[in-house]
Amino acid sequence: MLSSGVSQLRRLSHRIRNIVAPGALVLLYHRVAEVDSDPWSLCVTPQHFAEHLQVLGQHGHPAQLKELTEALQAGNRSPGSTTITFDDGYADNLHIAKPLLERYDTPATVFVVTGYVDQGREFWWDELERLLLQPGTLPESLCLQINGRSFQWQLGESAHYSDSDYERHLGWRAGPDGPTPRHSLYYAVWKALSPLRDEERRRLLDQLVAWSGTEPACRPTHRQVSSGELNALGQGGLIEVGSHTVTHPFLSALPVSSQRDELQRSKAELEEILGYSVRSFAYPHGSYSTDTLPIVRETGFSCACSSVVDMVRPRTDRFQLPRMVVQDWNGEEFSRQLSTWFRT
Image 1 (cartoon, rainbow, N blue to C red):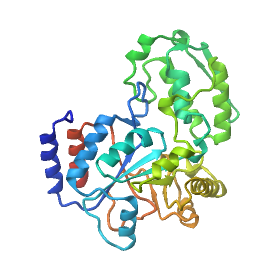
Image 2: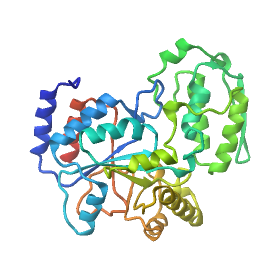
Image 3: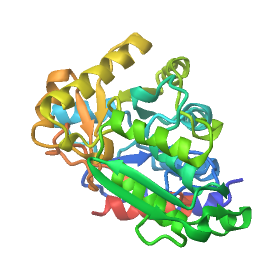
Image 4: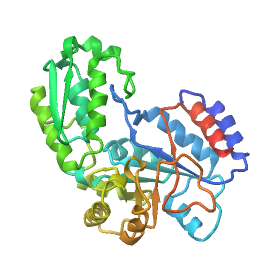
């Protein structure tokens, strides 16, 4: 039995079915997993994801992203439909999310960052969390040279971070006001690394690994899909694989030539692995400019998902599809959120 109660979910889903929706919803997930530390709220537990899928199944209108795009192209409405998307391409999308999607016969699209496939390295934000927020002892000070500027941070007593300290702050969500100097350091370094080019960011991460006295590692709980797993992800037709660039940059900060390279390379790399055309794209960080849109079209994508919070309406640009970010809600709260969204 689902923890929130089947009968309650049915009542809430019935309420959603009776709403006359002005458009469709594209839902944004990242991970279906249970991890201790989740500073960016990327994870939905398997239990809660199953409850979400049950609600969507009873709601009755789960749709492929392709169906939604074709409806927009044809000028048709898709009132009340919902489409599931995942960003980044974590391995749990295959091993945990896909079996649940199959159980509830619910389609989804997974947007993959190709530069991490088969690299044996965690996404940089996860690697930063492993280095700075896991229990252990670090040097008391950190100095980094970033874009010609010198940054220095002091950890003081927080250089030693015990298991009990770690347990106490597991609920922390990333922001400038950290409960310890460790958390403040994590956010400050993340903010400094975010706008950098991938090669510069990796160089600095290598420095952080050496500074921490650890070795490069990729936790099984945080790894991305391999090329072989990418094929398994797309098998059966229920899950579409889309592109999420090569290095997950802020596209709006890149020159046009670099934007074009990110899109064309990611599409070509996915197609080489999968053996078929990749048609869907999602903007990393939801970042793009007016220069980006024609590049998306020229590269051969048929749609692109943003991070703008809104419904998909009949006049929505299929290259700027808005999405609703889904949190780790139980089935009841997810139903309430859907009801609210469909009334907007």
